[in-house]
Length: 435
Image 1 (tube, rainbow, N blue to C red):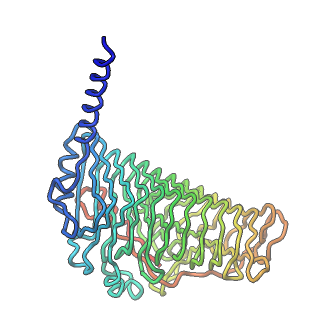
Image 2 (spheres, one colour; image 1 turned 30 degrees about the vertical axis):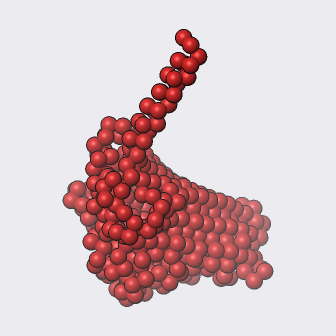
Image 3 (cartoon, rainbow, N blue to C red; image 1 turned 90 degrees about the vertical axis):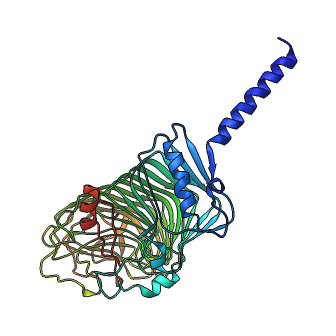
C-alpha cells in the first residue's frame, strides 16, 4: 500500500471520528435556545433526545447569558449524559415566576455529569425579603437552584450556584454522587440558603468546593450514609451541620460521615450535630469524624446540640431521643470567636457515647479555648481542652456542664415533590428545621 493511500485512509478515519464525536454533542441552539431568551423548552428538548440515545451525549450551553424558568427532566436514560454549561443562566426574580420549587430538577438517572465554567444565578434577593422562616417553622418554600433526586454514579464539577432563593442544592435518594470544584456564592444575610443539603443518600462526596452563603455550607439530613466532605472552604455561613434530626418519627439513621481538611472562616458555627428535644425521632447517629479542620474566627467551632430549638419554636419537656455515638474530633486548629471552643450538649435520655477529642489547639483572644460537656464523658488525647477547662495535656474528662449554644435562625428543608412512594415518605421526614 502506497504511503499516500495510508495517509488518505488515516484522514478518512479522523474525519469519521470527528463527525461521530460532534454528533454526540447537542448544542441547545439546535432546539431554539438563544442568549437572552428562556431556554427551558430548549434544554428539555435536548434532554429528551439525549436520554433516548444509546451512546453518550453531551448537551452544551455555550457562553452567553440566558433566561430559564423551571426545568424538570427524568430518566432512566439509555446512556451517560453530560450537561456542559459555559454560559450564565438566570432565574426569574420573583419566586412565583420560576414555575417550580426546584429551578433545575433532575431525577432517576445514572452516569450524569454537569460541568463547565457556567453560573446558575437564582436571583434570590427578592425572595430573601419574603422569607418568614425566622418567624415560623411552617414557612413558605421559595425555590432551590438544583434538585438532584435518585441519581447514581454521577458528578457535578466546576459550575457555580449563585444567589439561590432557598437551598442551592438538595440531594435526595442518591448513590455515589460527587461534587468536585463546585462553587456556591450568596451573601451572609441570605436566609435558608444552605449550600448543599444531603438526605437519604449514600456515598455523597463534597470535594474541593468553595461555599459562601447565608446558612449551612453543607447540611446532612436523615438517612445520610458514607458521606465525605473534604477540602471545603466555608464562609460566610452557619458551618457544616449534621441535622437537624429527630423531628419526625420516620427518620432514618445517619452513619459514616467524615469532615476532613476543611477551612471555616467567620461562620456562626464550625462543625456540629443538632437534634430536636421533645420530638418522636429515635434514630442513631454513628461514626462521625471531624478531623484536620482549620477555624478562622468561628463561633462555636465544635458543637453537639441535642436541645436544638431555634427561636423557641419547640418545647424541651423531654430530652432528644436521638442516640449519638462514636464521634471523633481531632486536629482542630485556628481561632474561635467564642471562649467555649467545644460544646457537647448531649441528651440526658440517651447520653452520647464513644466521643474522642484529640489535638484541639483552638485559641480565643490568644488563650486556649474551653470545653463544656453535658451527658457525655469524652476521651481526651494529646493537647485538648477537658470538660470545664482550657486546653491541657490529659487523658480523660470526668464531668459535664450544662451549657449549650443554639443557633438563632431557623431552617426548613423541602424534599422532592414527585409522586414516587419513597419521595412522598421523604417529603414528610426530610423537612429540616433550619437555622
